[in-house]
Length: 64
Image (cartoon, rainbow, N blue to C red; front, side):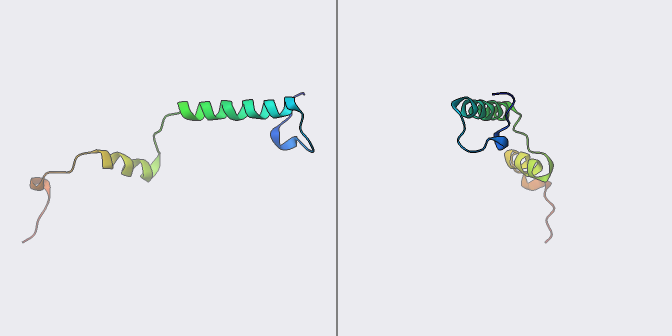
């Protein structure tokens, strides 16, 4: 097998082709697991703000 991409496999793949695809998927999963879990944008903002403690009532503006 020489540089066969998964989407180029047709018919009945050989054991080597199947092993290559599984190795590629394992490498991608490992890289994804080691990547930082920070979520960019607004989703990251809301996730971080949920971890912060609530403000005390003295900092809130209250109208009476």
